[in-house]
Length: 222
Image (cartoon, rainbow, N blue to C red):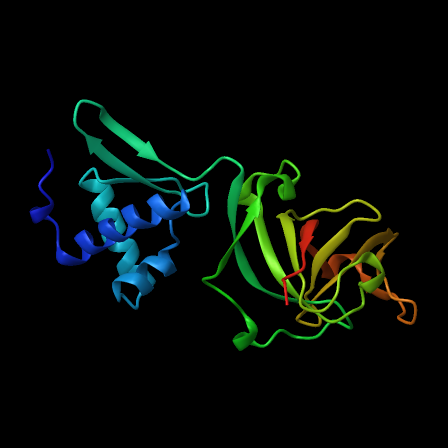
C-alpha cells in the first residue's frame, strides 16, 4: 500500500479534495477548482503537484479531455480501480466573449481564460470534446437565430465552413471577431446577421478566418 506520508502536504490536500469531489459529483474537478479548494493561487503550481501525483501512481491524466484527471484508488482485495467522469457529461473551456453585433475588439478583461462549463455530450453533436470550446455572446445581431445577449455558444474548432454555417470568425485587418452566418461569394465573404434591421458585413476572403462552427446554445438561467 502506498504511503501518503511521502507526499507533500499540498499533494495530500489535493488528493483528499479530489476524493471528496469525485464522491459528490462523479467527475473530476478543474485545476482552478483544485487551487481554490487547497489555497494554491497559481494554476501552474497545481499542475506541478498533479504531475507529481501522477508520477507517484495516485492519478492518471488525459490530455484529450477537459477535466481529464483520474483518481487511482487502492481497495483491499480489489486491486486498483480508476474513477472518471460520466460518459454523458463533458467539460469544455469557456474561452471568452464573442460579439453578435457589429464586430468590435474584445477587451482583455472580458475574457474567461480558466473557466469551464459542463455540457451533455448530446450538445456536442458527435464532436470530440477536445475540439470544442464555448464563448459568451455580447449583442443581439443573431436574435432571429434564437441567440441573444448573454447566451453561451458551443463551437467545434475548425478553420473552414460551408455556405450557411453559423460561425465565429476572426477579421485580421480589423483585429475583431464576430458571430454570423457564413456565405462565400467569390473573393469576398458575406457575414449575415439574423436581425431584421442589421445589414450584412462584407470582407475579403483572405482576411476572414473561421475559428469554429456553432454546435449548440445555452441560455443561462436568470
